[in-house]
Image (cartoon, rainbow, N blue to C red):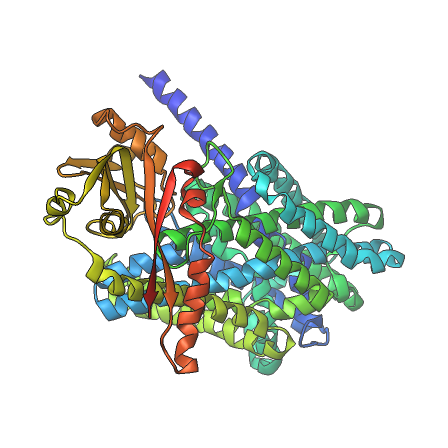
Length: 627
């Protein structure tokens, strides 16, 4: 027994080790490449701060304690406790908090907070590839100033190729992400340690006294510095969002054993360099690197930033799929890029929109310093929302005492709020961009949900109860035709497509299957409990899927055929209803939501592509609805 237990422990440790390497490669790309630009931006960003020793030590102290309090304590220790079957992310957190409150208006407000956080994440997804890749390529200008004119073209080519290969998936590339990022973290740790040994006095900045002194002595400059210091924790949300792929243990082990020490050492090393040579603040990261190694470091940094971009873009794909399943976005073509990993998806429409926006950012902002001015508001806004939702969850679900929740929430709100307000000072320097993106996305998500509910209310008069269905099917004017018809629907009751077919064609098939596709409030549904079948006037099937899963109608039909052999998955016809909307509103302002919903509705992916059904066996009945 002891040998079996020992073998199991070895396998468990090996599994944890592999997950830890994977987490280093995927989860920590964004926060791990922040040293490329974060420290430099404190002194030479949107708000220039002259370099003196006290300010450098104060800024380093703020960086150290920001990483410790925001990432180590808030996210790694506290927020990662909030999971839904192991899955994390801002929308998961909002769903958990709204379910815990159990009051309709409060729940709706919390879900709106979650949508806002998701919208800010999309804004982050736009800026991260642009600033990360551009800041890495700018190292060319340090190694060979004559090549500085090539920075923008090289960054544009890299990012174009990056988005062009997304359709192939990240499975193969993902295998080398972890080792590359381990090399990256070891490299930045060694560079930082080498610089610290030359100026060991920089270690004094770990004492929070220097942060307090900076704030008490120069509160205005310290407040402006917060807007750049927050760049050192960009990507913290990824630790929580990617928890479902790697688990708490591997992410926590990665952070405390490798990532956090490497970041601490590198930031301290950059600070030590600036203490020795204040002019180095213009690009303190690459000036840490010996001249002979600068080009190899540019290549490694570019690889690391592409990995960081991959993590954010993949997160945008996953969040899009989640929003579609929860009813906040219309159907879009979603392709699974891995036969083994269900979470690896590719959304073409989102990919190409991101590409156009990211390339536009590079062309419009021209350098990483200007992009850094636009960065921060989205990140800190997500921090504030996460803190509020966790506090509500801690009180209403975990049962934590108010004497603990209120002080902890207050501290979190003060820290996150200070970062957010500081970043608002960069609004005119580009900070408006992520806010505009977030507003547009929240408006789209809310408009689609509003339109769906209004459309459903318009269709109520067409609905037929299950009790009335036999009378419809057995009416004298209704003709039976050979074959099997499958009516997939996300609505309750009898599908409108079936009612329309009886009313318009006066015919039904010999075998009729009503397939209800239900989205559970969990990320995944046990496969053994996925399909339920009831026989009656029609074969009534309910197929349940989590919001992280994509419905597989063909698989459901194959399962039904095991119980009902007459249902042939190779010859059955799939029948849907499609709707078009026409507004009768004369007020041009009030027409806007309807027009936006109409555009989204008309551009939704057709059922055949979305569900992966054979084109020659899909039939749609259309109807015009007036709003």
